[in-house]
Image (cartoon, rainbow, N blue to C red):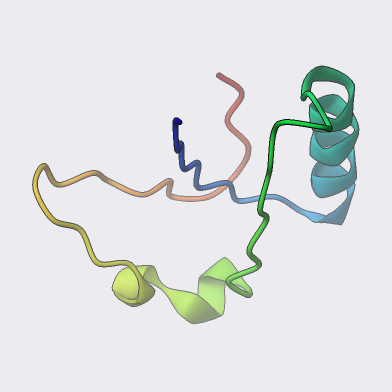
Length: 66
């Protein structure tokens, strides 16, 4: 079993595109994807994230394609 977490700063259109891309590549009978809306990044700030171990910097905003 593998768990991966990705933090994405997406607008509504980017979220639709991401869902379409994921739908075409996951194994729907085996894989599970959870999307959690943390609200507007400008209003939320980084305070809602807590890290242990290596400090990871959150995206400053805008799109990033890896």
